[in-house]
Image 1 (cartoon, rainbow, N blue to C red):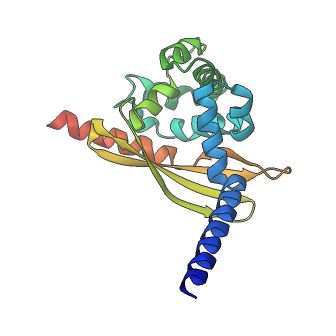
Image 2 (cartoon, rainbow, N blue to C red):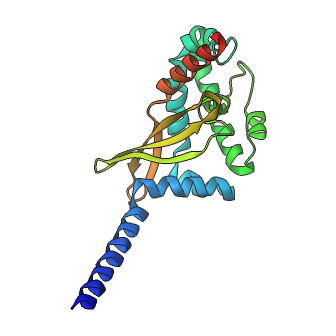
Image 3 (cartoon, one colour):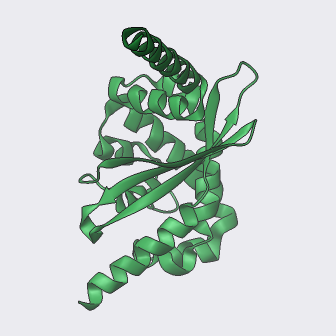
Length: 207
């Protein structure tokens, strides 16, 4: 009887693990895993299946530009430029951000990605700013939280930031697409992250 019970328990755990795996394959976390894998294999088509680069960079430009008051702590002159010429700069910043992301996925090189961005009116790299949040020494600590609201999901990705001796959570909003797969659309706390890094940078400067 005991062996039969153990056999049934093992089957139940195996079945549960299988269904969990299958649900994960269809969930928002799976989309982010696939996008991350695509950056390692430099597969831009797969990356763009799971990340809406236009939407994400467009939101990012809006969110970062709204923090013009603190950007001077991170980008010399950046805050003044964004406050005075946002309407003119936004299309260029969006194009530059998209070019940077595409080049980063294609080459795996942050330097090449930043060099690929068009620089006519302003020299502000959104990937450079992102590197202040998740730097080259950062490590992925895990999924902090995940909320699935039917057609929309929020996933919090936690990263270490050794430069500031802390961790940071990047919140990604994903939407379910008509064919059932999930696609990242926005980093919802980009403005908060920029403010946080600016505050940490100021604290470091005062030490």
